Length: 253
Length: 254
Image: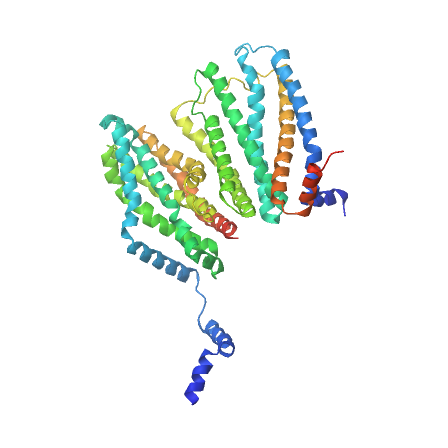
């Protein structure tokens, strides 16, 4: 068998995944932290102040990467859920459900930083702008997935139902997005995007790229840790988990 | 003597059960799509007729929402007529949300939902029929009551046809989207607020186009575009939502 394919099959086994996650999650966290620290240093000290927005634009280095992640994580969750529904891979159920709280966190960060940014720039914490509204609805979809997963007792049925909701959400998100754009154009003009592509200087972009890479790495670490915890909880009756617990509790020399 | 033997023979499980079932299968054709739909509709209508009071509840709830809005806005005709269409849409949407939980709940509790899975017709078809019946018994009375409720809210008369058209296209869409959510939560003892949390994000486009069409006509613009989009959404949902709800039922009952 192709070694890559074999590795992929092995990863589906709970003990193998546990070892994999325990090994790589700290690396992903550590690298993510380093890259984000470098990106934040660049964002706060290296990049010059914007000629229009002064220093308040710097929050974009947190706002934009988390906004990207809020949508990317939802897509990834739906992909995992689809794999779990079609091939009944238990690990993919776990991974899909581990995505939801992290994605909800990124969405919340996006909304909060957006509000903090909006106050000095637009003069208001909140506006029914299409992007803001879609992001808020995305948060509700995340909360729905989390709520459905926690409301059903049987873990596997819960993961499948919540995963199905994630797939429905992914299908409907573009519809929601464009309906909101359409609706908004009725009442008021599109809010001016102060940071179009053209106003973004090359020196400003570099820390942003570091932040985007950093959040991705952080997400991988968080995903592995959460999936590992859920995996252990589900497998708690098995011998290998008992062995792991005994090794952790065992008398230290 | 011989009759006694006959009686024993009739109740002999091994000897008689198999041939009898075989004979019946040969003689009676399995119910088709139309036959099963008719049976389900008759049963639903009979159940609703036996509990006539329940069928009025969505309309009563919508009336209460309208009254509360009118009181909260101070009953001023000018302010009311400006928001009348939006309030009507919200009242209908919330009333539909409340009745959503009953869509499959009774059948899940008494086990007939499992029989749906075993039925010789596709599960999606039964879901579609049930959703249609649910719409006809909860949303249709509201649609009939809309002119009266709109009068309470001082809706300008010119907007009433657009409001009726948008509700006629939008409420089946709400029911179909709601059927997916109700199917997802059917495995739970109590779904409560969760149904709302799951359904409301999916309702957003319907609300926007529905209320938006009336708002357009209030501004003197052509509301047909929004209504056509609602109709397009309805066509899509009629095809896809029963299949999605059927998949969700299979997940919930596994």
